[in-house]
Image 1 (cartoon, one colour):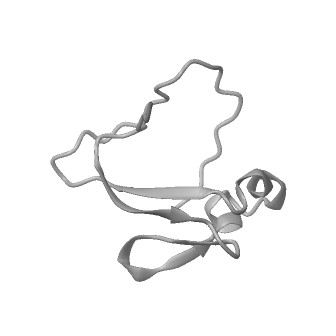
Image 2 (image 1 turned 180 degrees about the vertical axis):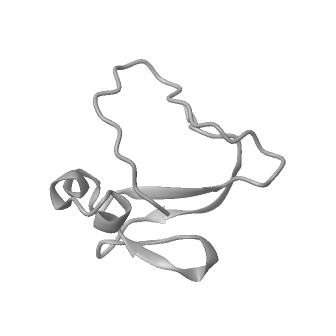
Length: 79
């Protein structure tokens, strides 16, 4: 089963290698940058997989957690 937190289209999908994830508009960011500058938070995701989900202006712009569980922390990362 695959779930998505937003209504959008997958624009990129792949492996996280050498701590880089390629994002929108040709810019790349380190995994640590995407997770608020916290190396400890980034560690479990190193060498994992990523998906970039594009939300067009017509898409529903709310984020959901479509799974069972308890949200323990939210971190705001500007940008």
